Image 1 (cartoon, rainbow, N blue to C red):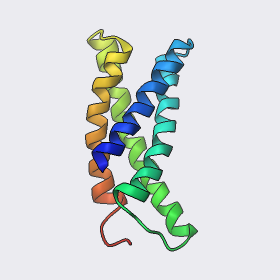
Image 2: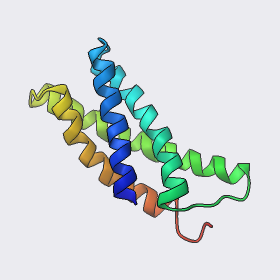
Image 3: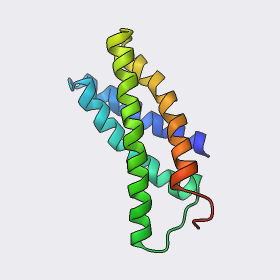
Length: 123
C-alpha cells in the first residue's frame, strides 16, 4: 500500500512542480509548494490506508500530524539538497532532477513513517 500511495504522492509532487515551473515560478518556490501539497495528500493516505492508524482524540491526531510534518521537513532538506546537486552541480533538467530526487525522498519518508510516526500498536 505504501508503494501505491507513495507513487500517487510522487505524482502529486511532480505534476505540481511541473505545472508551477511552467507557469514561470522558480524551481525553489515550485518545489516548496509541490512538497506542501504532497505532504497533505501523503498524511491522509498514510494514516487511513497505509498504516491504518487510529487516534482517539484531536490531541493524538495533531501529535501524529506534527510528527509527520516534522519528518517531511527533514526529507524536504534532503529534497532541496538533491535538487541543488542535480540542477546546479550536474546540470540536469529540473524535471529530471525532480524525478530522481523523489526516489530518494520516498525511501526516506517510508522509514520515518514506519519507524517513528505510525508505529504499530498505536491503534
